[in-house]
Image (cartoon, rainbow, N blue to C red; front, side):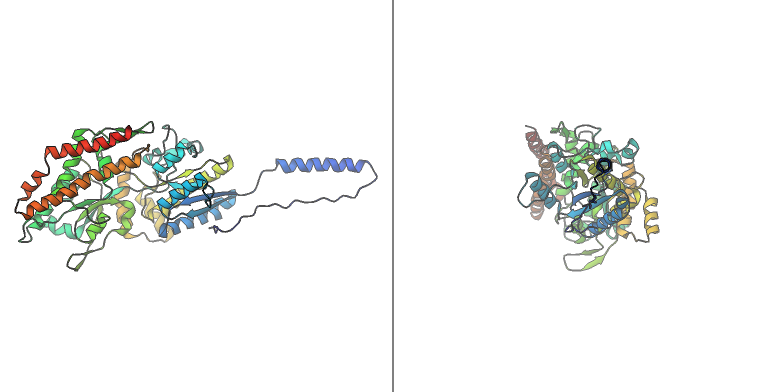
Length: 498
């Protein structure tokens, strides 16, 4: 890896020719011809100076180390052969990276020139695209090369037209269901609960109800059952669920939001999250649901595959006691009667406008980086998924680690055994970016969880006063309650379109 403080010198020495003037008039003529030929040959010679590519990213820790090693490998091999030098800079967090890009675009004092390449999520990439700063990758890829990538990953960058590719996928993630096997096994043994029931949202809600009742019966205290399930990134539940049910809650249309908050679809989303939540079957307390599993608050959660390395191995209960646990990853649940669908997420790489030679060099690096060997090395070793169809293959991944002599983290291996088939069998979906996309996501990420949490507290207050769980829940799961939430959420989304 080139140190970011080093200066790369490509100055070429210029030869000097000294001549002894002769009285013979022929000599100056010959010399003049020599100078002409020399000048022509120098002007026509190809520019053999190396192309210097800069890239900004937000990788840190082990992921940054892995990326740095790959960049060094490129510079020592393909880069050396093709005279391409790649220099990368970590800008810290995603937010810090976006701030650095904004400062460079605005020409703020002390800011660096824009890089050639930059890690970017779709929303940020779309803003850069609107400013006409980005280069379309599609002309640099043959149809065969383009089709070698997982379709959902490259389609994310179809800004402006379906044939464009403004984002180059590097490593992606999806979501899976993580289950505390240690908590599940005695429950399943005593109740007959089946893992198959966890394949649908309806089945999961029913299983969570059974788990609450089973744990409640373990004590003399009434209504102290334990929640079974929690979910990270609630907006994904709303977006993927509504898409599965045929009425994606909002989409991008000509760069603006188009809403389709169809009432029956929204009711089904409500019934399979809000009602179980206020009943005590679902829960969300910690920053992440893995935190809730670590404290024994829940026994299962849906989270990103990129967090697989942090899958809990021990539970610490309220009384300070601990218990070692084992966890497994299961496919993301789907709504009954729908086609399997999961989110695809993760930043790709955008390319800023430059001369043709620089752009070609940058694409050469990205193509190399996403070849199976490099991409498996970077993605699988850091909790992400490869971006090519051929690399999303457990045999391919296992062979790489076997031949390289590296060990695959057991937690990541367990995740990959679930996530890879999911990538192959599920539709991978994400919304196209548009103006106010972040605002729209915040709305669907917050309105229902906030209401569910507030009304769970109301239900608990009624339980403390002696109400039955069924009666308490009935007071806060009325049609009027749903209608009020539905109309408020729809109104907020429609306001973004005004």
